[in-house]
Image (tube, rainbow, N blue to C red; front, side, top):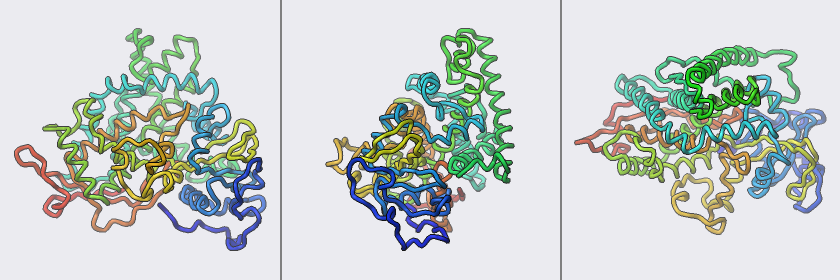
Length: 517
């Protein structure tokens, strides 16, 4: 975790604590005025100390100073930061009635055309949520599994070719292409095929979206309404190109519905279900909601899953003994196969799943959940008025020793045995990478299946190590947290008589392909 000192305001002496800087004991019926937090400037508040690319680590460091419930200000707006596991779960349970996504998120996403289930609230959220859950349920994933393996085979061929040719691989870009191809096939029934460069442009456009969402929702005012910076102009161009590509997805699905009317009552994917609801029920879902959900699915299924798999590579190269155990499990489960061929085998990969859980605990790609209050609430004995921003520091709560023993260490074994609660040093309530409560992420099962499929293929066929001259890996925050400076090498695992050999200890004997992120 980044423990560096947050940037300080040049007009503020960090050694001079004001009244609000001093942590106070928790007692009931406090107000925001009583909450501890970093002192700030008039009008600007703490905005000069908030580096958006390190926002999560700054807020986590402040939690270490001011406690699990503190406040700060973005200009004149109060923000309450929460890292206590019980309070986080209380907030998530009381959605969507008492809490909602941060008030600034919906306008920013709506301007970009991303007005889907992610940002929807109330009745609009309920009807869109039902469609999303149906498209991503286990029964649909089982039917989709052969297509998932077709895309995984594509990724294997891409990496086989690169290692044979000694060509460099941008592993995180390839993983993003993989997740785009998976999501487009599952959610829209449309094969973008970015892995074979047929739709690679859309990946380059999509990667511009999340950083700008992060910038705009944390901006003190909508500056882009008055002046467009180069990054804003680049985003506008990317959104035009994305809308053009997604219009093709929608037209393709409309054609299929016209050719096969039975799809209206038995849709095979998320987009068909939305179009059927629009066309059959007389417009319950609007055209903009259809476009917004298509874009939401594509963005949500791309960056977060790819970033989590990149973090898995980071940990498994730091811990070659754990990598060998992953490979041993894969050798036992897959037999002669070089990738998953049976949906049921995915459930047998318990250690690989434990590695993914431990990765998400230590490197949650969403270390902050941006929410706000729908009404006046009481949280942790503090009276919080309607419209107050609530930032849930979800990674911080899972890094506490009282929730997980050896909390700062990468120990996948902690997920292998059943746990009953905090008395065993393992509190499942402190692990919320997919949220919790009524708005638990509908894509959870797809994400886990994608990660198992891709990582099973990778470590069944290759061993991975840090590059010889790799820089230290940093955390880069842009609405989600991804690794920066990750550079690794792939090595094909040698086989004799069809059996894979131990690889990690003999990397110098194998062809090396540099992989940079």
